[in-house]
Image 1 (cartoon, one colour):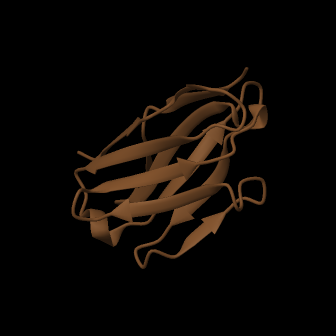
Image 2: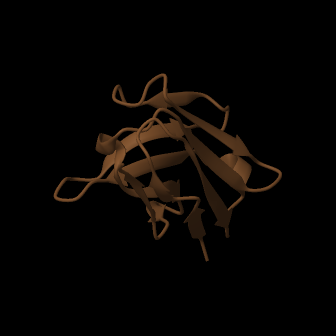
Image 3: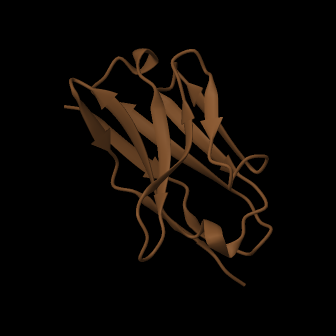
Length: 115
């Protein structure tokens, strides 16, 4: 059974930082790319960053230069380092991976940026 579990969310002031973690099980972790998505209240879920099996990364324009995605295949974890957060970054953050012909999602972790 494929399982993704996000952690690390919370309340942070504008300009602050958070590091999200995504723990994966049930897959050969090193053979799968991973994505980080967020969903703000009343908005569609959007991809903010991804990392491939070769550690190549992509970022949404809105987070370039502020967010950094990484992975540790030994620990079967992916990370999203988020710096210089602003209120527009508020939302539920999800990690995802494609395996066995479908996309799997974690349950999400809430990030709130507010003073």
